[in-house]
Image 1 (cartoon, rainbow, N blue to C red):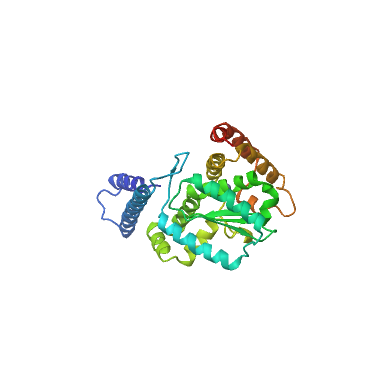
Image 2: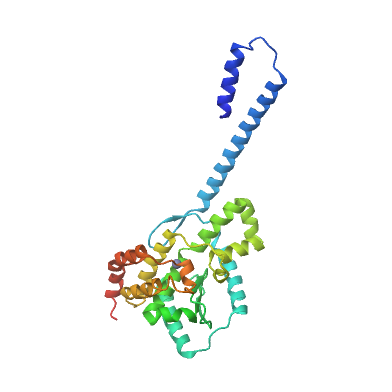
Length: 300
Ligand SMILES: [Zn+2]
């Protein structure tokens, strides 16, 4: 029963049966409870309104290409600082491949994608991590791209690699990790506490960052990208690879090869953050005419 209903019922009862009787201790307790509920209700409303105001003030981000409005409470500077921290940690833990042929291919494909991404604020680097057991890749905020050697058997060639790098760079350009991180921290901490956690780079903020960017995918803790973010990254990624001179029609091969591994005894870790299904491949087919226009006008 709502406070207002209790109050009117109480008034009605009092007007009939207790009109001339003094208020009992029970009445006082009930009346105090109603007051408390009212003030709790109003302060709750005020907090929600304040939160929405903050969200509105910060959430003026728009994803590239699709123009989708995003709720992002992490500033680009905070995001880049966390990204740089993660980059240094990964380099301490992982072994960078010295394979000249594979590195040459990664640098070539990576820089062609970077050159069309038009992000002069990104400090691009492309690192190949020597680990055939991990089939994964990601791009940290600020443009640090990691590709594990384990994913190369699915990419097969430069076009396949451009599909992966284009897609991961698209996630970074559209700030999908920051979007996931914002929602998680908001749910956990509230907006003010979140700003403090981010400023001080608290252990919790770092954990959420790692899980938002899939950096802990191999130990099974991560925030999956939403379906909307995945389709958006596919969309932006296809256009990036096409502008960089890689035929976007070749992306289908990579996603189809990956989808076949769904029921394998040890499916590639890329699948845990990028589930493939019929809808995804169908949507990529729908996007191909638009992306191919960028490719077909280039003199390849
Ligand atoms: Zn993705």
